[in-house]
Length: 416
Ligand SMILES: Cc1ncc(COP(=O)(O)O)c(C=O)c1O
Image (cartoon, protein in one colour):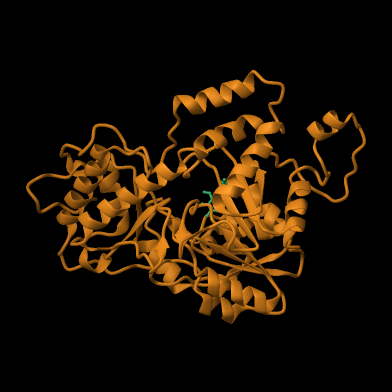
């Protein structure tokens, strides 16, 4: 049962009129005619799979982020797997990462037979806390995998230093952070390997797709082989040189991104700056509008320009009469497509069963999870879309604010 609102305007969840007629998703792609033409051109060409567009996309992407090499993959998850492989992770090794991420970040460690070790996050950015990482470093630590939560860079300098002292690889999962900057430098060359995703809700999409960028020539070579069954060179190079011979020197996968996808990626790359600018505008507007509401707004550290993949608020549950689940459902009823990022990885049944020692071990990530709601954030949002989100959030939170609070139960509320 829903608690009753106090304001005159009834919430949609209580039978009132929703702020919008149609659901506004929390994220979505935007494609233009140029994107469609680029894909159709490839469909009419000789190469659908690993043709000229792959190399072109990789070169332009590397240049855009400021890295020497970029190696494309069929998804961000496959790219993470490639990075875990190239870092040499194997049975007996550990990789330290954050629990507040999509499970793919930790799964890539398991794919290699190694063990993910979680460390808690910083209260402000919800990114991996270097002090917590230091406490967990051991002779087994072979990699540190930071995530730039919501598009705000992790503490890359400190984490890189810890990895260096340990002789471990530093991998940055920048699936949220394409275009994020710190001290004027873009993510992409600030870790041994940086991983990106081109899923439809990301800044640039190829449908599914991913990329690893690196300044290491050997790492790039390993990554290229890994995504192609462990074989060096591609079918196109062999065709061009009139050769049939190839050798498989290691066990790899088919994680190749197609020419169709890379043509889309290339076309989207041309609009990336504009997309980022629009996301920054939307974030600034949310921040202005929500200052007086019972929520913690995303923090931005000095010198950082986040890429704003997400705009994730944390509800001040002690100042609200209902829990996160009710607020979530009320916003959905207003047709605002909110979401929650993330159920901490160690709380998923698969991880709970295999790593029982992790239970209730990361208080900041666990508390944040109970408070988090991601508001719609995508570059093609119109002024009306943004206005509707502001209106619905104000409507719902003013209705439930200031009623003495509701103590946290410590259990998930099933809001998804
Ligand atoms: C932080 C993070 N890492 C990894 C991934 C996996 O990327 P993909 O969906 O492209 O496999 C995602 C996807 O959303 C993500 O958010």
